Image 1 (cartoon, rainbow, N blue to C red):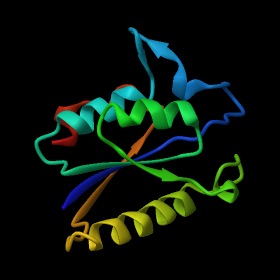
Image 2: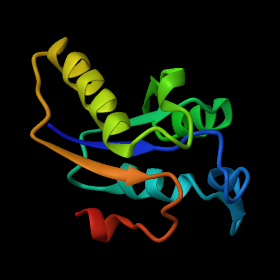
Image 3: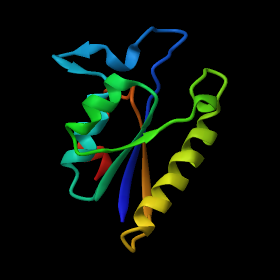
Length: 120
C-alpha cells in the first residue's frame, strides 16, 4: 500500500498555531490532506498530531489519527523520531488487514503548496 503520513503538532515557537492558519478559507494543514485525499496513488492517509483541531480537520479527509506521545510534541523532538513513531504505527495498523507499506509519502502540516500533481 502507498500511504501518506502528515505530521503536525499543536505547538509552534516561531509562529503560534501556524498549522491552523486560515488561507483561502482553509486551514494550512488541510492543503496536504486535500492533496493526498485526491491522489490516485495514496491508499490511506495517517496523521501524527497532538492537536485536537488538526485531528478533527483530518477526519474530514478520512485520515487515521496517530496520537503523538508527549515526548514527541515539543520543539526539541526530532522529526526523524516522529516519523519513526508514525511508521511503526502504520506498519501495525496495516498488518491487521494483511497489508504492508510499500511507500510512505511524508507530508508536513505547514506545507500549503503541496498539491495532488506533486504527490502523483
